[in-house]
Image 1 (cartoon, rainbow, N blue to C red):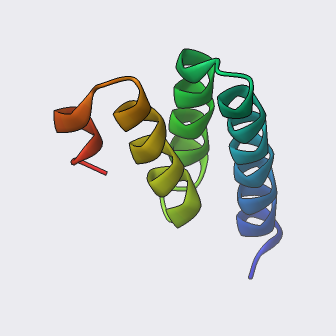
Image 2: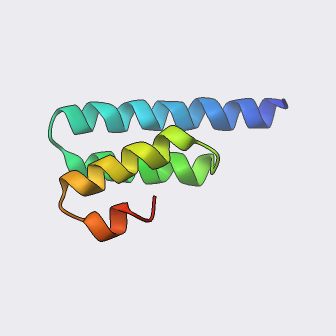
Length: 68
C-alpha cells in the first residue's frame, strides 16, 4: 500500500466518523455530505456507502438510498 492510498483511507475514515457523529445528532444533511466526501476521497470505502444509504433512508429518500 502506498502512502497516497493510506492517506486516502485515513482521510476517508475521518469523514465517515464525522458523518457518524452528525447522524447521531440528527443532522442528516451534514452526515450525507460527509459520507459523499468520504466516497469521493476513497471510492472503495464500503462503510461510507452503507452509511450514506442508511442516512438517505432516514431522510425518506428511499429510491436514492437504493443506489448505494
